[in-house]
Length: 341
Image (cartoon, rainbow, N blue to C red; front, side, top):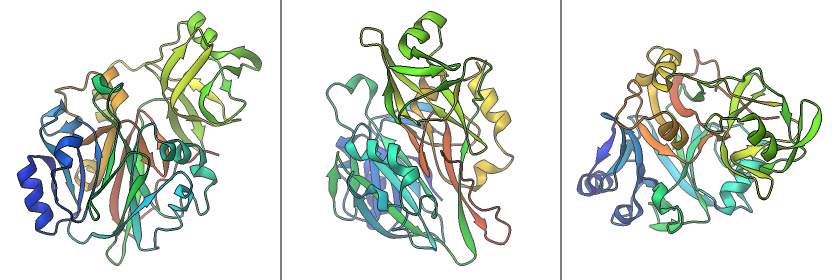
């Protein structure tokens, strides 16, 4: 199984050789690739063999290992993204890539838990982005390599078939835990908020962040059916009295600000289950971990993959590592599904 950065020529040869690939890279070089069994999303940030890196000249290649096959590629708009789970056959899992800020990204993030057959099939993936210096001028895109189509308002999903007796297990590695501070609940589901209920009292959240000196590099954390799930701060607009997030907050769910972490890498490695890096088929990490924890040039064990604008582990999550492994069905504890209510 290949999971490394490669130049365009090498990737082109893999495609022409019939390999099934999950790709990430700069839009310019992804457009040079021939049609084949691959999907891709734009991003120039990666966890590579030598550590975190910014690279616009190479493509991160995640080749499906022996026994796994591309069973087809589907594209979705915001109008039909709720079919993504029911469209995956029983013996397959899906890999989803959506462009950051697109209508389909927002629809998937807010409506996934209420979609028909939600989490009935394993779904892993990520949110495509651009270099942070290009946010005002560039648009994240995804690619359907089977058709050659490049999209900035649709999501692409590869269906991956599993060998007999095997199952795909989707999980997240989250080093953040809820702190002992104020409990915050939101009146509605969405990517932004003005007023929230803080310790039982209605307050403006932007003002609360300013007055308490809340460190917005740390996410809000909620217990979603037994698992700690993060929602990361995008911006606090004091003039508008508005807070924006990188993932939706859900109405009625209680959130708390995360506990500080002295060293991301040390916490990550101590939380990493033994041997997990050797079993991972695909993984991605969050751009906020890269930025706030100084991951450039630093490794996270043997874990490699794109650094993304959001991770998909059945639903959208933030400031985590999302991953999928292939396990023996007889010994599997079933997929590590950690969901919102």
